[in-house]
Length: 241
Image (cartoon, rainbow, N blue to C red):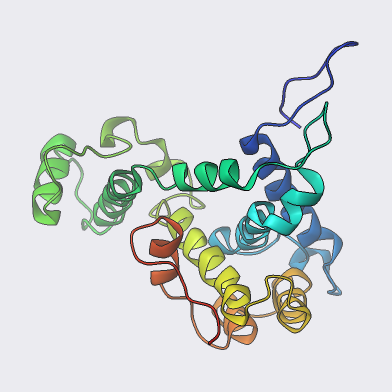
């Protein structure tokens, strides 16, 4: 893990971001460990770029559950669990400035897509193109693109990235919508939903189109509203009546 090691007197302590990274990478590990397919070429994380992040990102959500933190987020000296008030502050802070972050990311993703739709021209005024596209999008003057086009390496870094910057945001829609299935049930450890997640996502590799795999798990395609809830841009989900 990419974290600061302790010394003889100080144990190795994880920040909340370190812990989230641990859950994220373990989600990738589970994707490989639970794979149940015949051919390695289609196993584990050998799936589409936006789909490879679903098992890792959806697993991050369990880090924030009170049942998990009450058991594992213990003070290294007193062994007391994280106070609930501190947890609420921590989770609320994650939604700070998400409107800005969402728009600045989306601006870069849409410009990336638009640039790859330009028909075979030998040269292009990239600054002029960017300015024109952002004006068309109505990007507020107070928000800039996360990556300005001249140094936006994703654009032509290879076939796996070209016109694909949006995929990170789509992956986050998938993980937010996927975890919402557990929230809607009223039990974030619901065994029946977990089995569908296992069978159609973690174990399935690339046996079927990702859309089909997700629908088999969720019963429908992912909806962007789940991401807006995760980022605090709409009201949180209500559990079962």
